[in-house]
Each structure stands twice: as C-alpha cells, then as structure tokens.
Image 1 (cartoon, rainbow, N blue to C red):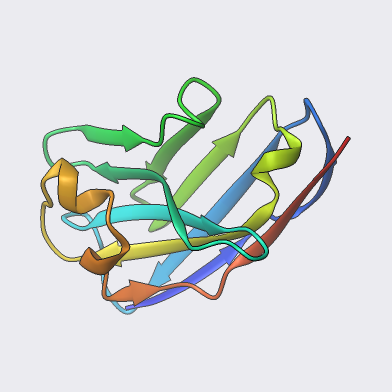
Image 2: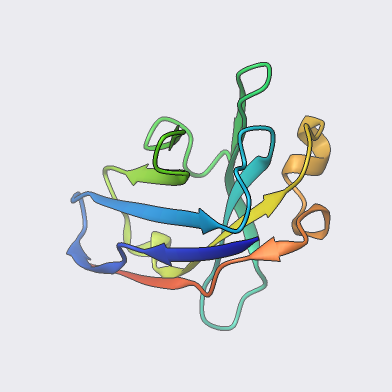
Length: 126
C-alpha cells in the first residue's frame, strides 16, 4: 500500500483546509485510516481515524467538532476537512493505513499503522 498525502498549505487562523490521502496498491475498503500530526519539537500525535466497516470514527479532543475524516471509495482517497483552524494546528500531517477493522484504542495509536504517507505541512498564521 502506498499513500500520497496532499492539500497542506498556509492559512490564516479561522480558515479551512482539506487534506487528501490517495491510496494505491490496494483497495482499502476494509482498512482503518488515520491522520496524525507532528508539530516542531513535539511528538507525533493522533488527530482522527475512521473504520468504515461499522461506521466508526474517532477524533482527538483538540480537533473534535472542527475536523472531519471522510472517504471516497471510488477514488480510494481519505480526506481530512479542517475548519476553524488554530495556530496550534500547525504541523506536518500524515495519513496512515492498517488492514482490517481496528478497535478505537488501537485506531488512536500510531503503532497500529504499518503504512504511512509522506506528510503534508499545514501552517496556520495568526
């Protein structure tokens, strides 16, 4: 599985961006997909994940109500819609994939994902 993330950029606080993660090499209809981020000088942290068998999504508390993870099966692409962006959302965002349906606690851990995209930088200015 190869993942290609894009859609990052520079945006003012309060603005919106939509990140995309296109998968190739495998149809991930049964995969769990996640988004993580890493800010300068900080560890990688969980942002959002979706397991579409069962319709399960999970969000970090810091982004709940502002970010939405979704998927286009036909395009084999996962999206992260980010609204009401804050300066503290500035980070490199990574998409990740894991085969099968993960339980929520595992969905929120980067250790559960063997496949990773290259990251896309999101910069939110004040």
